[in-house]
Length: 109
Length: 112
Image (cartoon, rainbow over all chains, first blue to last red; front, side):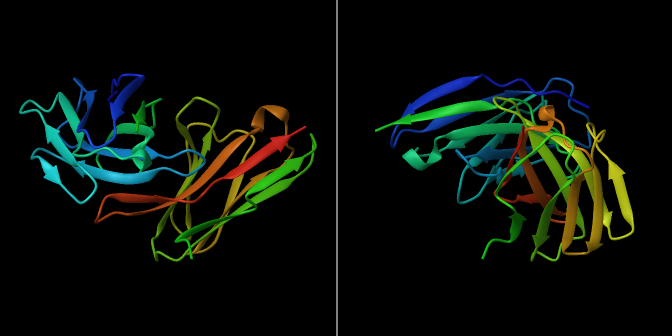
């Protein structure tokens, strides 16, 4: 299974954009890049996923490098509610999602 | 109502006891999963099921068993609980077409 590398923690101020990086140099051609987040005391929550092209939804944007060896989750305006652990996961689908330790995002007022 | 419901939400049990954690979903998904999370770590897959007749072991299935009673119900059992099974347990469902997984709120299990 291809591995991902994320920073352990990041900080942001409220209403500022946040760019959460993920490196995945051994990604295979069939792997999608999935992002989930886990708020305190809750189960993981789907954020976004993509294969090759950049993706946008109401929660975030996903920027994928042309060689697919890295990606960036973009929160356009961080809110206090965005404080969570963010997981970057590679998988062809949702089967056997492998969660690493993720990036803990702190958001300050 | 939550799409994926886990019961109980919290449970304390004694070493050697049998315990069952239950999961039900209203998403209509065929795929269901059980994960375990230890403090400060990511989730690890215990078992998964692609339909009622299909059960598969995940990366840490030893000491656990599962039952898929219906499309909507997937139970996890600890036949003889031990303290190192103390953890947060999550049930999830997924939709193959949308490539999205949906998680329950978790069951906090403590084995003393």
